[in-house]
Amino acid sequence: MTETAAPEVIENAEPAEVSAVDSAMKDESNQKRTRDEDEKGVSKKQKKKKKQKVEAEEKKKVVEAEEKKKPSGPVKLGHKTFASSLELFDYFNTFLHAWRPNLNVNKYEHTMLLELLMKGHPEAEKKISGETCAFQVRRHPTWKSKCFFLIKEDDSADDFSFRKCVDNILPLPEAMQVKHDANTALACPGGGKHRGGGKKGKSKH
Image 1 (cartoon, helix red, strand yellow):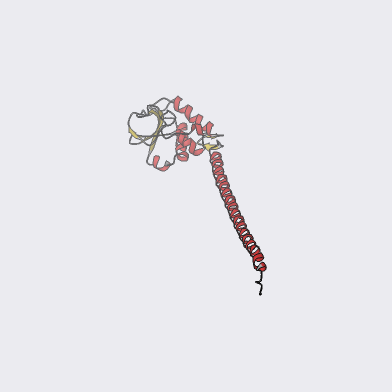
Image 2 (cartoon, helix red, strand yellow; image 1 turned 90 degrees about the vertical axis):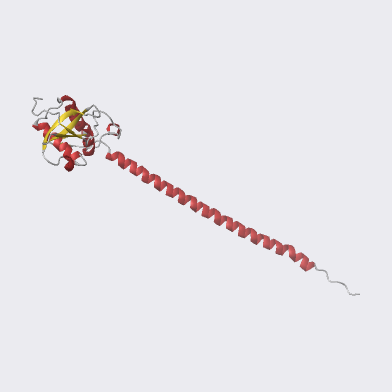
């Protein structure tokens, strides 16, 4: 009677093959997970680095803007030298409120105001084009506040903001800068032309 051979070798081999396949799959899965984690790690680092770069650039811009707005000096204007924007501002602010309205300023102050316009007004050439007759302090018809006016030979009058001119020459502190909706004696909007109302002549002031 012939005996049937026992399939011990085949049966014993199958678990080993399955184990090898499982191990290979696990290794591949682990390697893939590692690659994914590495890629995520690199991506996070790149995003963080980019964010830090943007923040650094923004901070630099803020610092530069602040530096530009710091009062500095000295600057020569007309017959005087001013150490700071505050000193320059105080000079014209005091003069604005001390001078009699509708009276031509004297020769000394005429030179000071003319140079203030030439150095500080963004459209100086347009503003002083033609024959400039005089400067006066007048009450603005719209804002109801004192302003400097440039008087021409044809008796037309053009107002301007001395504060804006000062800020363009030597930057004022932020709290003192002119706002777009400002309506004060120190910040006439400027640019408006008017007729008449002035008196020619000098004062002892």
